Length: 240
Image 1: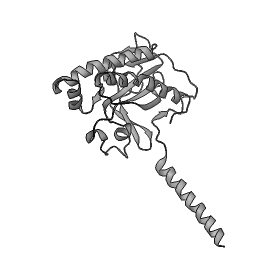
Image 2 (image 1 turned 120 degrees about the vertical axis):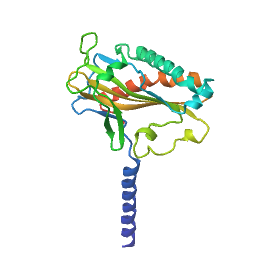
Image 3 (image 1 turned 135 degrees about the horizontal axis):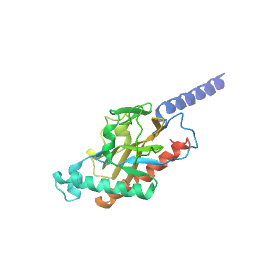
Image 4 (image 1 turned 180 degrees about the horizontal axis):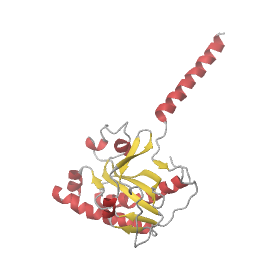
């Protein structure tokens, strides 16, 4: 009887361990695909409003010090660089995407939240109900919407978009900078049917080695390949 009891107890302990791991160790989902967007669909002709002012710089004073800029200069100077690098990456990695003015978003519906996982949300502006965006008089099939680009040292998307962890301090507030991070929230939108196809949060991280300018350029440039990879895995239905 003692042996049976021990075996039962061991099984019960294993069961509890697996249960708690499932509850606490489950993988967060950083993208979401619309149920009406068939798995295996192909990207169609796409238009993308340019980045405009939809970017955030975290710890601007640190960047100003590293780049030998005054605090008053850093946002304007980096803003021009960020938009230029981002546009270059779009041209190189998404040559079929037509860029349009960022002011187009001014005609969209007010900002709303979209749920990607139980505790992961993004916010953005989407076309209003019944609104179809025209490019040179033509309505392309899809829109690629960049809602927000966040750049900073020692950031993680968990601390920004995971509501269970959003109030935790980031390492960058207390320690020597270890990495530079760029995070983008985005949506691939059906311009004809008026609903999202795939939405997600893409993140690029590089170790900080003191070359702020080149490393900043790299994380911004690499966001588009990371983003398109996430779109592709959303299309085939295999995104984590």
